[in-house]
Amino acid sequence: MMFRRWISKVAVLAVAASSVVALLMPTMLRAQTDRAAQTKQMAEMVNTTKFKKPGPYTIGVAAGYMSNSWVVFCLQHIRYEASLHKDVKDVIVTDAAFNPAKQVSDIEDLIAKNVSLIIYWPVDDKAIQPALAKAVAKGIPTVNAGGGFSSAEGTVSNAFIDQWTLGEMVARHLVKDMGGKGKIFAMLPIAGTTAAVDQLAALKFVLKDHQNIELLSAEHGDWNRAKAKQITENLLQRYPRIDGVFSPAGQMSIGVAEAFEEAGRLKGVVMSPGDEYNGWLKWVVKHQQGGAVTFPTRAGQEATKLGLKILHGEPVPRGLIIPSEYIAPKDAAKFAEMDKPDDWWASNLPAQFKPK
Image 1 (cartoon, rainbow, N blue to C red):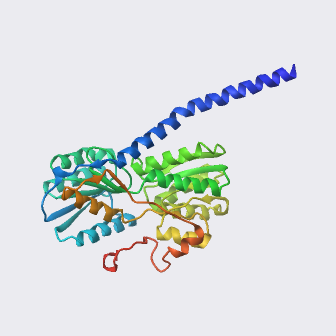
Image 2 (image 1 turned 90 degrees about the vertical axis):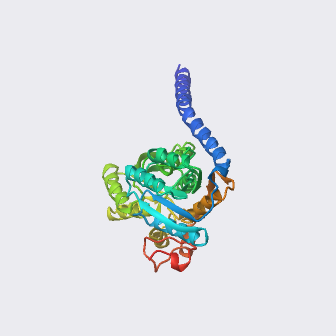
Image 3 (image 1 turned 180 degrees about the vertical axis):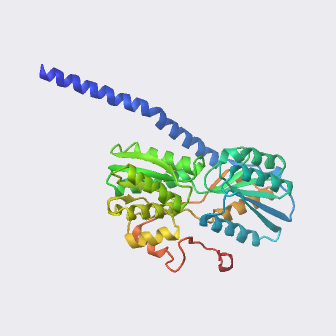
């Protein structure tokens, strides 16, 4: 009788487990399908003959925000590349200051000024697409720089860091460093951006194979050190146990680490790799933990190259990936610039184009 009861319990548990897998399977398959479709879209070559026009060219930059050191360096890469081309006469820059409505207005203003090309990084991808589509309809090509891939009709091409690949690399290193178990939270970029969506999707994709790691919460620190720190302070009050943090952006990672240190809980947490934000690299050098997965600022330069090819009528890929690379903690000292401020990024910019 006891043996039969034991068999019955095993059967119930097996059915329950299969039910959980059945519930998760559509989500897992959807993520894989979405990723496969995105990869196919990235490889598509765009016929740009309708955008071909003679110079001189004026490049319009519709910045979703400028209060972020990465985009400051990204913009300098745009200016540097523009300086190498005699047919570029001007670069006009607008700053939406994290306001989607302002970015829409900025794009419409650049259209009215009849710029030759619009390079942008978004506050909200969906909110600005109608304005970008207007630009494309008027023969002004648009190139997304940096944050993530967009296949919308208002975006002709993308020079970007593949947020899925970056997120997966960061997640796998975190899982390994945690020994495959524990409780974590995620600190993500601006809600609704491709960066935030793809990073979280990649994290969940990795975690499906690591059921002993629990995702407590997914937060949005907006690439902001102070905001990430404040959010972490609240999480530390809410959760008595946090074993690890998924935070691909060094600007937010350093704010997260500061909150843990001030709460006296830094020794109990494993930080994921951040990026090559100088403040974070300095932290990695000191603590020999986390490392970095790079988020190259030269995305701005590559976006400019794409834009000029489009203006010359040359075919371009829908998505040009700027590869991310892993920097182990032991190698961080090779990249950290200890004599530079935290808000600094390693780059190959000539001295005259580096931010002052």
